[in-house]
Image (tube, rainbow, N blue to C red; front, side, top):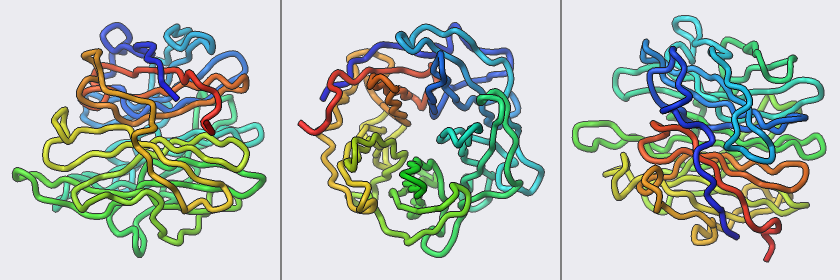
Amino acid sequence: MYWKKLGYSLDLSVQKNYWQKSHAIMPVAIELEDRIRVYYTTRHNDGKSRITFYDVNKQNPLDIIYSHDKPIIDVGKIGTFDDCGTVATFVIKVHDKIYLYYNGYNVRNTVPWSNSIGLAISDDSGKTFDKLYNGPILDRYKDDCYFTITPWIINDNGKWHMWYTSGTGWFEVDNRKEPTYDIKYASSLNGIDWSRDFKVCIPQSNLEEAVARATITQDGDDLYMWFIYRGIRDFRDGIDSYRIGFAKGNINNPTCWTRCDSESGTSLGPDKFDDKMQAYPFVLKLGDGTTYMFYNGNNFGETGILVSKLTIESLKN
């Protein structure tokens, strides 16, 4: 398995809108009838993050055929979980609607932020969205005592599976609070109300590792997960910065995974845009089997969104 780097899907040096101050983080892609739609999050002049999207050619994800010029949902009302920003994390078709799961966050006093998972729904093919609730659908609770973010969801014959990132603590590093996290599992019958058993699917290899952002493909009962991991000491384009890991699992035992990072098929560089960091991958398998990975490079997507193409269709070999 090997990911062939194609280049920039979105280059902010040529595609930045007037209301974007910086960054295009956390790409989230969905296949529509005649295009791929990529949602992403950008930082605005008021310092808050909001979600927008662009469309690309299915055969050539470097070919942008439409770029939306405004946010699709706004920050929440003062005091709600998303009053300081929204971040796209996952999207899925549900009958004639599209569900967009997103992170909402608040600025905090003792730590930099608090994060929870919200849901917005579109009935016009993903152009506009309405928040289902003013509150989150997955928040801090019992063993998820720090934060919950970045869900990946599979609807398998009416049973909904979610692999999400759960905060495990905060560390003081160079007079700054830095978080750690692992990947846990939840289930649902409707994609809205979720049950958690707090089982860890991809644990930290040590107390100073952060593991997050599951992105999964399914082949029959077999599951293949790419995720990100980093350290806490020097992860902003340093030696501890984000890398893409890999794990194998089975839909019938969704909390049991075998981690094998060396099989991810990804590598840093040699391009200067991702020679220090690869972050926030989103793997999209099209109906014809073509599989793309949209992801961010150095400095958390400051320069845009990169895309790679999987060169081997089957991951069983």
